[in-house]
Length: 373
Ligand SMILES: [Zn+2]
Ligand SMILES: [Zn+2]
Image 1: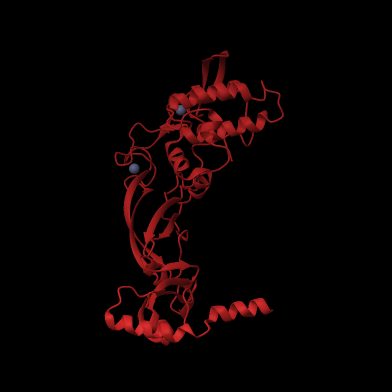
Image 2 (image 1 turned 135 degrees about the horizontal axis):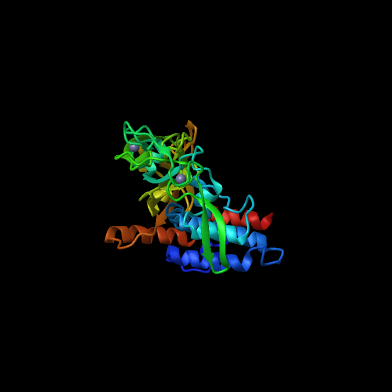
């Protein structure tokens, strides 16, 4: 997947004029009318796609942040303007230098247009991912203008046949380009190809038919989600135009790092610090789990790095909240430091006893088994 800026040979902060100029230069280089190389057509199509994306502020912002995949996720069409075929270099230049972009060149402005999907990143706590949570989120999306009902016309007025194009949506123009002057059919600049024009646009939406509206939505986050989990809210994206369907809102979750617990799949991990005597003799200690305090039995003779677990207090399986992973405790045995006189005497005594005893730790036993097998 090539970078749109690289395809056009421009900086990431290029202005629209620079994008246009770059496109003009490259289009003349790669249009199959001029360039007979076998990959010219593919390159030309890529060029069109890069140009179209970067000339559209919304698409460009999405592309800058999330790349080409992000455009697809956000519901933008991923096909370029020339994928379905293209005209001569002159026709293409006309459509650009006429100032109407590609959208009017390939699309009927009166056809239903689907609303865009929107994406929202939401950060949640580990506890919320484990137990599920209902969250309120604020979003801004386009809704059908309630003032004009989406027609874009002020109440009591109606769009009339466009006086410039006589309702055809197209006009004849003489275009001067670096390749010479020629006559072309262009999109009508008055009605933008609609064929109808309203001289009294709706005051609320300025003729757009939709208005930006802020809404508070409730999102139900199920137990067991993880970073990257997506929750779709149907019909909460932007509303369409000319009766097109409304887009969806996609909430993408990220789970914050917990100060004590690490997560791997459905298991949670933490460490427990044990003293020498605790490890040697065994104990029952209180430990933190995501369900609160629990008792953990320390068997006698436990070794450093051994793993103990409490079953069923891990993360639930998404969609099956009764099935939960485990909490695993990694044992860290601490060598005593700063002994007082009494402790020092006791450890010395232990030391003397151990001096004539063969070390018989579990690890040594295991080693022997490995060596003998
Ligand atoms: Zn309106
Ligand atoms: Zn017109």
